[in-house]
Length: 240
Image (cartoon, rainbow, N blue to C red; front, top):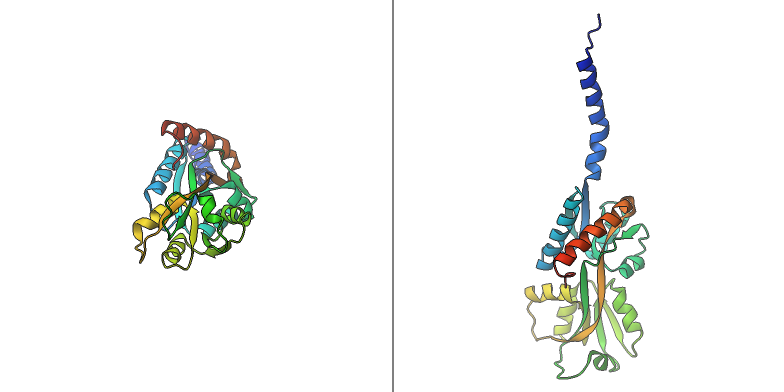
């Protein structure tokens, strides 16, 4: 007489199935993005909430890691993380990360601001930049700024490691001008004090920011774009 009853056989099959399938499902039900930053600024909190809502609609748990900007790209490109929170596609291309897939949803629009330690009454940004010999700072890795300044005449372009360092150099006269992303500058202005005031001259242009997924998750690009665009529309547009 067999000691293995039909109920025992069923339980054994169920147990083996759970051992085989459960880890794979858990791995597929969680996404970790690397996000450039050192603290949770209000705009970043808004962005993370947007991702949580979008991934929740897809039945996927979302989490994040805050890293320096270059590491946020390299972590995602190497597969250490599952994607990047927000970068322009041009920046991704310049970073040499072909295995990152753009999600077709503009989650933020970033103004590229020109700042000076001199207050200009009615001078435009282009007029200020036309003056020969200006030392213009920008955060290293912002290829948009470098490409823009390469088209100007007589600019001494200076790369700095952080936006905060560039603003401090501007305030102490080591730079004549600084170009950077408005969202980053706004965060640093809240937390820095300067020996001399600095002034916003104007806006040079804007960049559309997208999330990017590691290619192993490329099947999520379209459904994630759909959910993000739906949420962005209900919230009145991209983060600015």
